[in-house]
Length: 268
Length: 287
Picture 1 (cartoon, chains in turn cyan, blue):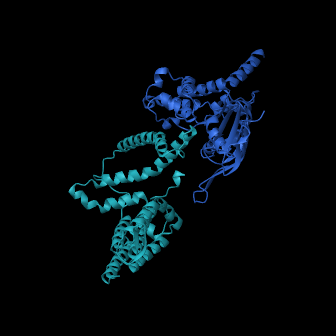
Picture 2 (picture 1 turned 45 degrees about the horizontal axis):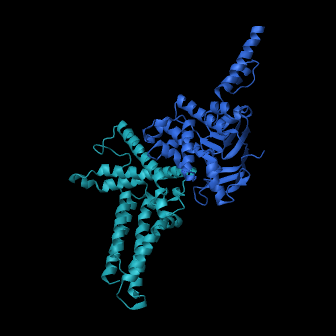
């Protein structure tokens, strides 16, 4: 069923990772991703993997949930793997057929690339699984605060993001309902050619768009009724504050990047 | 005679194997006879909507069977699809499913999916529009230009046009003004009489179900709690109140009258109340 999609869904909990300041998590995530691209060798990748595995462990997020979220991305993974496998020409040749060459370097690169993408996705999932959308946008708004000085409407952007995230489950539920209603009128979404199936989407998409616009309109009115006027002079109910655990997280993140750079300088 | 629908030990559990697992229907069994008007009442979350979607094969039972006209609708793929057309389902707020450019084409969506001929589709669309009181001119306008009540009638016509033998409606009058409500209920009655159809209606209005239905199914906490004629069901006022339901206001008034020592039977429609009061008045005049 549609509502089983978990991509970017928040898993409420009270682990040390959940309790971290959203800004900390965002910054450490960026640090981790940068390290991931600096990592070149098996050893560096191993370090990155251990770090990630340990973080997942203390976050108490079930591994199953993370794996389930990966499903839609399997195609991208396979595509990357295949591309790297066949288009690397360096290194000793392992197999050769139909003009295609698989080299040892190709295999190595394909595996590393797939591992990199997997870790990239997992660490991003970990952020959205352990941080509520509201906390996430609050964190982003706070981090992008300096951009206000050059006229970027930071508050408005984060509000837009917040609303978009909040409406994803609502729209999924709505889609489910409309699909059932059209199925009750004999609509068939599973059979037929590609064109027929694409056409079968019209009875879902039109009502979905209509209702999305209706909701947007209602929400805008409701916000205006409560005198919403953007970020000017607006105070927060939950003030973001760094704690000792945030400092620890920064420390660990810093150590990680230093370690990876050091390993890289030794050619590892 | 064989019942048109027979539900045996129906159980349905959502999201099995996840933390969100939830049993929406628990060992529900009942029969629906040809031509009956059945009311389904129950508190929010009692499983009414899930039950409806079981009856036309939208949801597959976790266990138990749904028999339509003596055949299990899940025994064969063809029968499942057939059940979609023989059992018409009107969801809550059905006006949100409209999508076509004109009212005519929207009503024709169901019959078209049935693979009928163009003439037959045309006949059905016009007839269905007639049942819900839409005019010829309204057939050619965009459904999005109509009022809320009219949109709802277009959506109901969209299901009626498939000419289902069983028409199931989930709170068809929710959110309408009194005028719109009585119109919709009248439309349903008209369809029932013209086609000899079986009707099942979920409603929160005890007055409506008391007045219209032959039999009531009361759902509570995923289970079938009570079954019987409105007269029988409304005898159990206290039990109903414990389930977060109610009895018609006029029934409450008469229960009170009886407690005050007046010699009245329990009634559940305005008409019965009028009769009872007339009788009572006749009695006192005679004294």
